Length: 255
Image 1 (cartoon, rainbow, N blue to C red):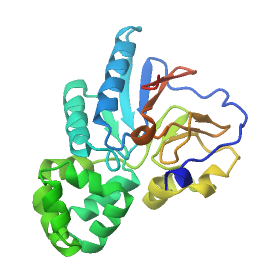
Image 2 (image 1 turned 180 degrees about the vertical axis):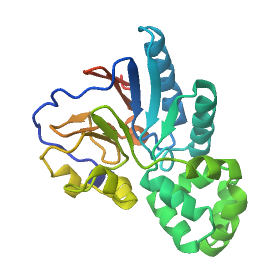
Image 3 (image 1 turned 135 degrees about the horizontal axis):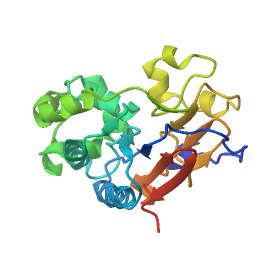
């Protein structure tokens, strides 16, 4: 499964002339996937970086897929809720894993079954349920258990995630966009799930697209997009893109 998710991207032309407005500093964080340990390390790096630079209107954008696969999804939600409460300027994009999570927590058996297939098992076990109880439930029983297992404040928090954020010459999404369609006309299913059709498009978009969803060993910079999902749950490398003026740089938890 993991090998299929990793995509070796061919080198492309560098991105030219893209910028964010003067006086703003943007930190975009790739797919966390339940790695609360890495998230805390990266947050510390971001706060240190921001504090060591000139004053700016700084904000943090999470590109979605906070949950699943890694061991601490419930804790990641708590960490990001506290970060937003304390830092203020923190925004979140809805990933495909959050979409399925919200369906599963309603107790729909079909959704719970699919949720388990794509890494939701680890998310469920990060809540107040033991492995013994989990394996003792059939899928119908697990679906019945879900609405009482996940706290409402987590559901409310994730439900408020956005589909797209635009700042200056950049558009931030979870998975990508459907080529040839205006940004204002993009459908949530494409923003959360698209892969090959978006990755194979070399033509310029309205804005440079910053996305996660597709794992690569390193950051991918093409002529029309920047991918920052470096497979944190497996690789231990959680990455943040930093944008300030026309400058691009990166912070990560890798060695």
